[in-house]
Amino acid sequence: MQLFSSNKKYMANWYNTSKSTWQDAKKSIQRSHFIPPVPTCWSQSDLRLVIVVCSAPQNFASRQAIRATWGKESRWTKGTRIFFIIGRSSQNITDMFVFTEKQEYGDVIHYDFTDSYFNLTLKSVSMLKWVTTNCTNAKYVMKSDDDMFVNVPVLLKVYCFQMCLIF
Image 1 (cartoon, helix red, strand yellow):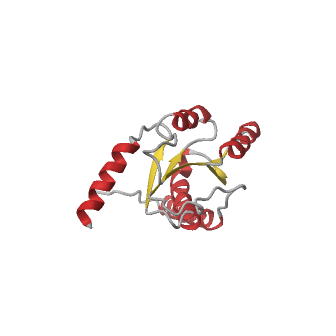
Image 2 (cartoon, helix red, strand yellow):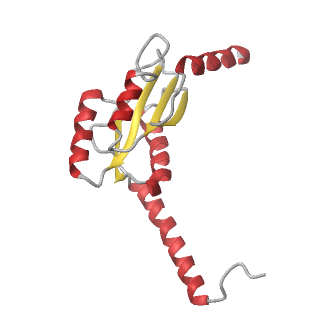
Image 3 (cartoon, one colour):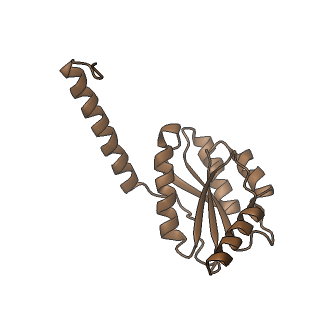
């Protein structure tokens, strides 16, 4: 049984394409940078949990819904910070709205790469890069999406229960 084509030209093309794609992705991760201003969580010394929500530039309504519901600061979320990570939009007008949102809320991590389905891995790696650089005092990091609901009080109860068992 033959899994690959015996056409050597096709195989060489497949190898070169996949190799260059991986090299391009590696270069993108190494040189990816934020679009200022960059939010940080250095000022919060008792930071237990950082939740980074992957979002698309055009999903402003989803980000607002999170800010108004489970992302809203309360006594339950003390020691918890929520940030949104997005890439560049293909439309300049959307990027202008994102810039305004960044100024108003201070919780948007805006990366200089095209926000697309094919860049989801780049977005996740960029999120980890941002956390290790800007939230070194965080004990835990959680990645979520803007179409998810996170029950933060229950999450923190489980966290506290596990910490009480360990210590």
